Length: 281
Ligand code: GUN
Image (cartoon, rainbow, N blue to C red):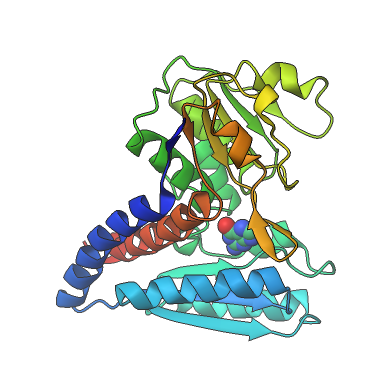
């Protein structure tokens, strides 16, 4: 049976350390501040944003959520971001994705000051990751790497197969794993014979968005399987991995819920604390 990569426990440990850093900043007269912008009323986004607010509260970070109507214009959204860029009390700015269709996502993200871009989605931060320079790393990929390392999964020289080529998960986690000296096939919806790739994977990252898509026959015995999926099936949250079957084959596996999702929020808090520390320390 696979060892569980317990994101919930790892995040809880990390949150204790982050609390110490938030307290140390407060002793220096700096209250850490994160502003989350939610445009529209996507129900999944509402849940994510609420959870981010809860994590802020737990750490003593001043969390502010600004909810804008779905029909907000590109100009108004950018004007708000630019105002937040200038506010000293705001250390981190996060625009919850996806945005309504009429808004240009990359254009909006480009207006966030790179230092306050706690999601790591600004092209400057994405470019730094791509070229191996220090910058803000996107929360989900950062959390995945943290989880793999904390679980003692060997990375250097290993084959790490990523499924999914999004800017939020697939591309940045591929880059992080490459920086760890993994060999990294980046698979996607047009990949031919996906199972041939996944069966070679020592590390398999599934960011597909299809419930229980990864079955046991697709997994190399002993592999570390990271499930990034959050799918709602009959009112229940399930991942992209058929957990019950795959856990019998894998060496390590992350559950859903209680895996990557918990790490993501924790890394958002870390990126926010780091943004505040850059100003003060
Ligand atoms: N939507 C899904 N994941 C994310 C994330 O990590 N950050 C933001 N801003 N939106 C998301």
